[in-house]
Structure formats: C-alpha cells, structure tokens
Image (cartoon, helix red, strand yellow):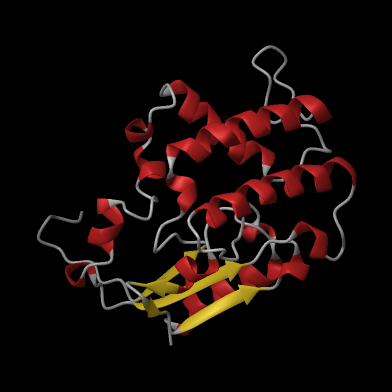
Length: 211
C-alpha cells in the first residue's frame, strides 16, 4: 500500500479539451443562459436526455451524444441553487480563477511530457453533416459558446467549451505536441472520446512512454 512518503512520478500528461488558461463559460452568468437554452432545446425537440425516474427508460436514440453530460451538469448547477462558488469544478475554469493561477505556477511543474487534443467545432462544416434536430441542437450551443468568447473580446475558436489557444498552452507556453481535429470532423468538447483517431493518438502517446 502506498504511503504519504511514496513518490509518484508522472511521465506523460495528456489533456483532452483542457481549459489550461480557463474558459469564459466558467462564469455563472453563462451557466444560467445554458440552462435556459438547453431546456428550450430539449422541450422543443422532445429529446430524452437520461433515464426517467418514473419509467427508467434510456435516452432516446435521436438525442445528440452531448445531451446527457450537459443534463448532468445542469442538474448539479440547479441542485446548488445556481450559485457559482457552490460548483467548484466549473468556477475553477474561469480565466481569473486562483486555482488555475496556482496550477500554472512554476511550483506546479511535474516534469512530465505534455500533450493536448484540441478541436474547433463548427457544426455547419462537419462531414458527414449534421441534420434535423441534431443540427439545431449543436448550432444553438455553438452560437452560445461563440458569444461567450466574443464577450471577452477574444473571438477565439473553440470546441464548444474551451478555446483552442487555452487548450494548446500552459502558462502562456505552447505545448510541444498537439493533436488538432479540424471542423470537418464534427467533434466537440463532449464527443472527443467517441472519435477513433483521438483514441488511437492517446494510445500512441501512452505507448511511446513505455519504450
């Protein structure tokens, strides 16, 4: 059994959609807008986003892949009374978060080799294309994300939650190796691990460390 005296050496650190420099979506004002938008989308298109407490039915087949994680995040926000400090995991991602400043400080360096996976999500550029309710769902969320980044005068390309620059740097220093998925892939912050190329790249990075 490990003891407090034991040391763990991290050789490889892979960040997938990591908010290394934060994201404006960490601001509680954007959470409330997301709740309103998501509620309207689900009600308007009749998506089932999780097992019903009454029926236990699974999510509907036509619900976009990102519905369930968004629903879980919203449930946590609502349960906490929409109070920013009460959701530390979200509040910590705000660009001016003390937690992020500490993580990016010199004393936080692990000596590990750093890698990152990023994407710029643009639903209308995806191939194969989105269509119907799924296109409406992703387009609405993408519009909200773009508005959040524009509000900070950064106009940064983003994966629906985190800006590409934020994902690609640590303490304003570019990461040595980044795997970037172009908009044509249709991958966003909620669907990275559903992509075979992402999984293959993660495996190659981890296997590289074993040789």
